[in-house]
Image 1 (cartoon, protein in one colour):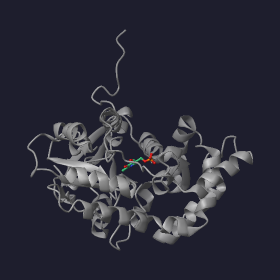
Image 2 (tube, rainbow, N blue to C red):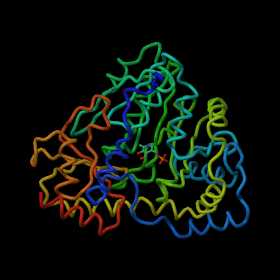
Image 3 (spheres, rainbow, N blue to C red):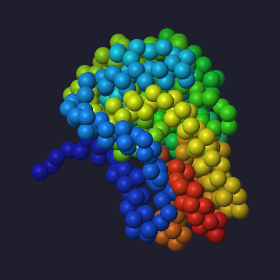
Image 4 (cartoon, helix red, strand yellow):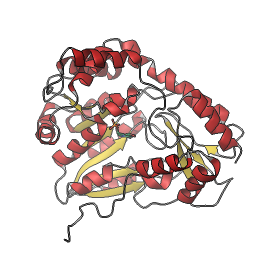
Length: 380
Ligand SMILES: Cc1ncc(COP(=O)(O)O)c(C=O)c1O
């Protein structure tokens, strides 16, 4: 049979490919964008408790009320944005699903979606699945500065959405207030939606505060903001994320959500709701990861890698031009094979696959992993 493939241009996930190399060469897993340490015990116990209490049937379509209330409280405290927990919060199966249903709800055949690359790997494929056309604005190392004039030039009558990500995976950069103001001016008289991926909202370092789209009232009517409690609380496998949007947009997204998932794991939602009641839990995340970032930077001081500025997220990118002239995929394979350390080539975050002699390391790891990873990298 000759079955057409909607995503013929898209290969298997980079993370799956690199994970395969890590297993083959028993490398230190700095490629993997998830923690190698355990999630909070109290959260595990809460999940057990709610399972035993019988919270085992379908959750409400928007998510369980206790969790939605806590999310709304968190948004109000952190971003001074009041949202309606009944109509403007949707609990999703990770941010991945929140991104998927947000794109699917609004992008129709022929619509253009501006994506700034390097970018998280699901954006462009999800646009393609829905018949949209990714319009790519490539950022250049070492500063990865968004050229807002260029974004303005890319806008056409077909532009339906712009996707942004802060703190940014893979570069570790963050958007500043002036970025949002520039965007605000560009989209002012348009019908363009902004999908703001903020899964690393709690990982902004050096005393900066996270510039969420939710801080900008003039953008609210075009906002779809995605978050990940799996990222925040070291349990990416729980697949609990959420979407914040004004009610009139949320109602459209819900039509996709109810046909795509309905609701994520019920007991996990109750556990998250209960856990978030203690605001200490979320407030402690920034110093926890900042310490890991600083440790990794310190341990890499003697290395020939040049670490680029990491303002947030739990990833850090490193230039290896003082070590090798190989392209980044070949260099990464060599890192796994010869040096026993995992990384992700930066080219995998560009549709064009351009190679800039840069790799990404993840520092969401135990201290001993970071130290032994850095020791191996220092020897190169
Ligand atoms: C920028 C970005 N967005 C979204 C996701 C997906 O988040 P989740 O695990 O909650 O689906 C990731 C995961 O690595 C990410 O880095």
